[in-house]
Image (cartoon, rainbow, N blue to C red; front, side):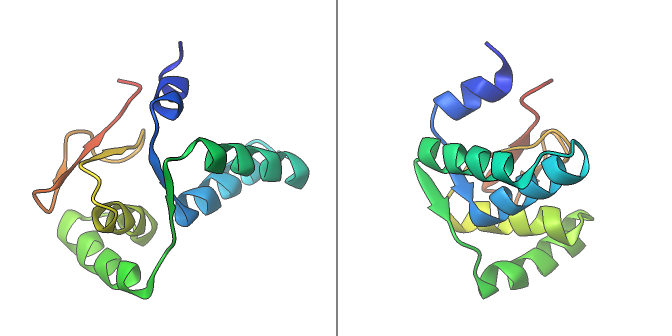
Length: 112
């Protein structure tokens, strides 16, 4: 079974920002039609144990994380939301595998 499917099947905490980033990537990089994006994001929401909204405090936290860990603001925003949600693992194929953020959450690349 592919790694991405295993992660989805094991239950996860997702975020509205994650849905936004997914939508942006599949639209720009793969040219998905809007209807297909809507169906995919609905499926992701249905599989999630919890969907976390983006708050103003997440933005503030993201600035701190971006500076401290030399991240883009968008990556740092995803991490700030994960920290607020109490996540201890954050899966990403393009962030720093093994990085421990704020001594509470480890970034892992599930495709390694």
